[in-house]
Amino acid sequence: MKYLHLIWAALFRRRTRTILTLVSITAAFLLFGLLDAVRVSFAEAGQSANGAERLQTGAKLSFIQPLPMALAARIATVDGVRDVAYANWFGGAYQDPRNQVFTFAVSDNYLDIYPEVTVDPAERKAWNDDLGGILVGETLMKKYGWKIGDRIPLQSQIFPNRQGSKNWSFDIRGVMKSPDGKAFQSGMILLHWKNFDETTPYNQGQAGWYVSRVKDVNEADRVAKAIDALSANSDHETKTQTEQAATRNWIKQLADVGLIVTSIMGAVFFTLILLTGNTMMQAVRERTSELAVLKTIGFPNGGVLGLVLAESVLLLLLGGVIGIGLVAVITKALPAVSGGMIAGAPVSWKSWSLGLALALAIGLVVGALPALRAMRLNIVDALAGR
Image (tube, rainbow, N blue to C red; front, side, top):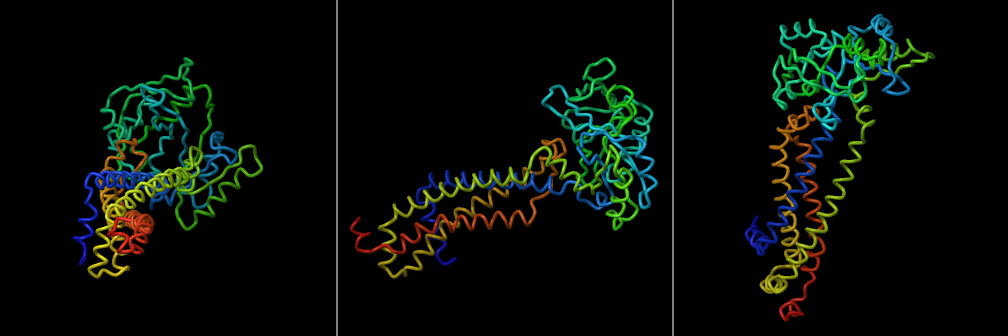
């Protein structure tokens, strides 16, 4: 801290260049924070106290292969199973085929398996009484400005209706809310499985997957094996997993989020090293005579080395703190932007620690070469301009 004023003055000697470099560093760490929030959100999908009680049973061969409805009653008889519900993928899109909305056709008791999702009792009854009704997550309601009673069109990417058209219409009967803001249903639409099954000619009394709630989470592995044993050696063998494992596998079917995030951040930070390294080399080259004067008045080689390294580290830490600080603000808007699929969790201490560690490491790397050059500077040559 004794020489902080010297470091600060040297850092902003060329103010425009420093500010532009600082903006680049901030942008890099802003991207880091946002991508890390996405990665953590997908990694923690289904990871909750309630989620630990749920098992998902799908076809062993492929998650798009349907299962017979008779399996529901058999799963319910397995020792340790409390409740069983089922669902089908609908593949909805609103207004534009590219504007996809997560839409499931579910059994009437589906929400009983998800106590973390709340629906007003009157709205739940209205939905139960209307086969053409839907329940909509509160995030989607706010995003599109919908209200209860609205009739909305949805286009299925997969299933046609009785008329052979993939354009469906539903009436909003209730809103699904998530008190803790973490339930993924807040960004989804649920319609009646019975309406779906009777309307499309392609389902024919089948379920896409089953969701079971176990009595004891410590017995989940045993229950999962018992459920899979029901269909062993049949034409519809199953694979039962915890909700978290099933969600991860489903996400991996779409994309390897971890690999994508790592690849992007690797490219961003490699570019950042080149950019900030060039900035520090120019800064030291321009101050050759000044550094020689510091040595002349008694600064040791180690002291000059430390000043240049501190300047580099300070530059990276400033950009890193600003970038991650902006992420802490922006992540609050992620649920609305992502339709509820990305949670708006605050930036954790792990993200702060990793971000600051990266800033420190990059600062030391990019500052090492110019700092060594400054330390080895010959006073006579430097003052002579050689």
